[in-house]
Image 1 (cartoon, rainbow, N blue to C red):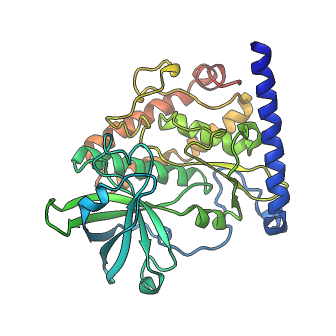
Image 2 (image 1 turned 90 degrees about the vertical axis):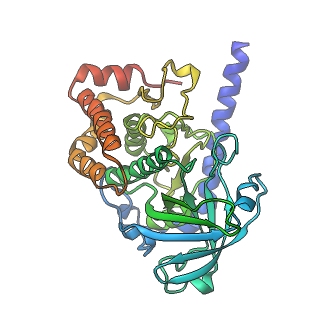
Length: 365
């Protein structure tokens, strides 16, 4: 039985390698000619890539309202859900858009009253607006129309912005003050902070990359500096709900045939920092709540690990300033976030704790 399991692991390993090289043979004509010297950036360093002017270049909060048959949308939650007509208002006027539900966990009615949405735009209408050039965008809204869930959204937004500080190999987000009016007036208007997520295609253009949609690639076959940084970041926010091999809440971005792909995280709603009511740690982790940190990264030498930790040390002041700057984040949640981050930075002050948390507890499979 053990021999059979070992054979399966070896077989899957070689399959992943074959998939990996097939992808690069296919993609070399598109991105292989890129000057690879431009791509070799240190972790934490700004990487310009292709210049993509977008709504994610601005930090201001967008005031946005949607008028739609809200019940019709909320009752359409299957994987084959349809787009539904809506009217969007922003500072430049009124626009016809389409909405549909998306996601996995949060789309289920038993988990969330308000699921995440796709917002689809009419290119002809949107010219000259902040949404010019976009076909559709992911919109993240509070799970329930309650203050606690709005704070969850703001903390998830904060997580995306924090990772932007650490590395440009990250998804960008834009905060909005959203109002949803029910066309039939059967529901009270929803007025909550929400945010848009940068499309994967735009992120790839920024990074001279391409979405590598191939599973079973071991993290050791990705960019070592960035996978270490990302793994420590997930520990920093108390998140274990991710997997490079399964492409679970991870995008793999290939840049050049001479460079290893980069693992870029997204979806942080079940992290300890957000601390959503529905967030429960996996039983095998041996932790009681998601607030308890558990390192999900693979073994790295101390010197390599310290290089990633030094990025956190150098960006500490910027990260703390960000916490205080998030619009709508209440003092209670600011204080809890600072305390949670303090615990992480206290660990970084003790070599023995670093050894215990990041090396002794690291994955070795």
